[in-house]
Length: 321
Image (cartoon, rainbow, N blue to C red):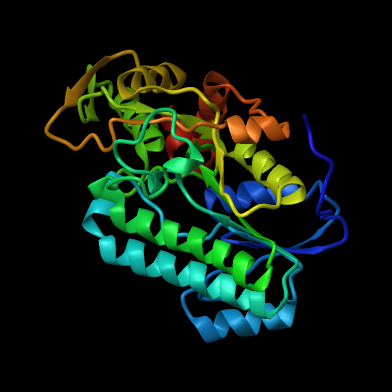
């Protein structure tokens, strides 16, 4: 059953913190249809890790709604080798934006987390209630702790001061604006880049990190943006909400689907000496579905459009494809 809007964005000043990131840019695209004033600030104008700067900016711009999409993000390699940056920067971003928003009496705020907040051995699919019931995946523990802290801070503002602050936990995302750098990207764009490079070089095979056995869920970022705007306008509760598609596949299957989308016809090999991460990570999205929202973009459609975006926006990629 779809809920009627409880918070109308029409005519409001809406700040998308992190508007240049994959999720932030998708939110800007989606919000352009909401008849609202979209506020943004690039890193050259506002350092979200500096409390006084954030307070000053928010007090001056007076947003009425805030999406906290800004974050230091990366794949297993980046998370595992730079825990200081992933913990410190994400803690500061959440604390500064939420505090400044509370002091400026922002009418509504959404804090965005990640499915990595859940324990490594969570029952599958993972419900919202699994939070803090077990040990985290070691390779992304720093990022997860920062995101959990942001979620708890949003709940604290809601309980102590009555602020309409909510949190959403997206699954693995992909799509336009993704990071395709092999040293810092997540698994899907990394596979796409590897497949493209292998196709370009005429390689007979492509090596995939890990055993290929872990299972992952992937949601197109434009579907995610639809879900986030849906929740911002229709949801108001302390409990965070999982945002996903409700389906997963092994990394081996994903690698083959990416190779097919790219047009790489070589063999796939797996380097089991590299970390797998969590054995499975599928979100229970029954709470979101019960509110009346479901994803629309299939993985095959999303991979095809994402590869076209990659070709258009990566220097030299199109001429080499």
